[in-house]
Image (cartoon, rainbow, N blue to C red):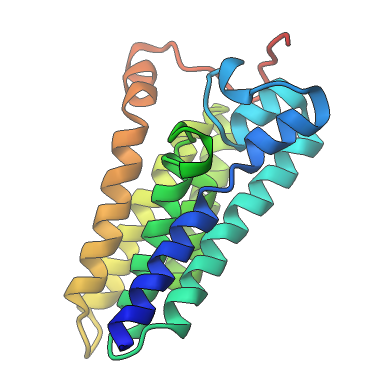
Length: 209
């Protein structure tokens, strides 16, 4: 029965992640599908390009909140499982929901804000240090994608460093974090290619709608 509740928690976390605040904001403000404008990504950065700062900040906060709530759902319904692993898996489910939302034809975003919420809840201090590095990177380079990748990769790296000096090395927990990191890198594969080619869009570039 414990595992039944945990499976239900994963489903709830996925459905929560499937709520696309970027799409809903575009519909509410301009009756547009955010996925048909700008980069085509249903996320906070493309919301900034298409709709402006206020809507982008709202989307960023709400998308991050999905990840935070999903982790706590995993904690609460962990049952016989290790709460840390249960929370990480529920967080992963919310990211999958954001990236492939069942409510919106499985066309979602790259899960950056939701991943930030998940990582910050699971490993606050590694995420905090990584967040400072990511923000500095964005301020200096104006590449949001680079900052996002640095945040996620460094959070995994710093968490691994902390775990190596811990008395309770949580290999399965780290594996879930590694999957989240790998998923983010894969979702950013075109951004990585553009960064290498020098054609990636910078923060502040607007598009006409």
